[in-house]
Figure 1 (cartoon, one colour):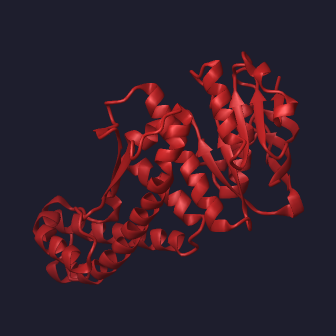
Figure 2 (figure 1 turned 45 degrees about the horizontal axis):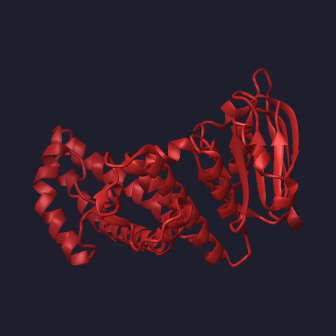
Figure 3 (figure 1 turned 135 degrees about the vertical axis):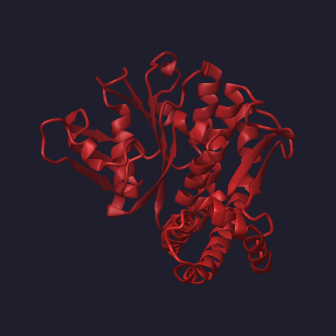
Length: 333
């Protein structure tokens, strides 16, 4: 079992909080404002070294306190990964290309120690290249000074291709699992009901093609002052029954696809890490808009996954889960 106990001191609205978790499914139940999501956030911070609620960790410190403390006891003090599901995940997965990239980048980094460095290096190169293009467009540098862009062009090309190819490879792995996960959620048996299209920039990921595209775009980039192609423009679209999901599916379908996507991420991690590092599912407000039957189905699926920690405000129908089912219900006041 990855997490046995969480202790918080001066974290968000928790002056002091201690919670014990079970190996399987844990449900945090309580009204809005009691600090359920803060428990997930603390676990997330411990694993990812950042928050999913704020970019400034100082904001997680209880008001009028100088510092906070997060203590997590895990089996044999094992390290652990986390995969997050929240209402915001559904929005990010269907609408924001930047957030889509962030979602898959976050997961790739968990099993590819070089990927984080490659992203950092590419972003530095992109900043330098765009700075030169912008300054040239505004006549702030000479032609001779602008010649330095040739150095950045090759590095830009190489790093961009590496990142785009790894993103494409990761989404291909998601595709291996997502239809099966979705069918289990909605209790159907349809093949290839969900398709994922990776839209790389440029579309053909070869060095020769990218060089060609960069040459074609160069004069326009000098006028506009920024890079027109590259992995900073990568995107992907999710299709349900052949239809583009964005704007064409119900809220329930979007929820089910997002949940299937998260479970697919979890499957990839479990297969990659081979029990060396545990993965925990953090599921914020998972039961929103679910009826009694769907709640039971969702829990049945989770029991076959990793350790899961769920938050919910709705205690209605939770009596369908009991200790015999291996469900640990934690009431928060």
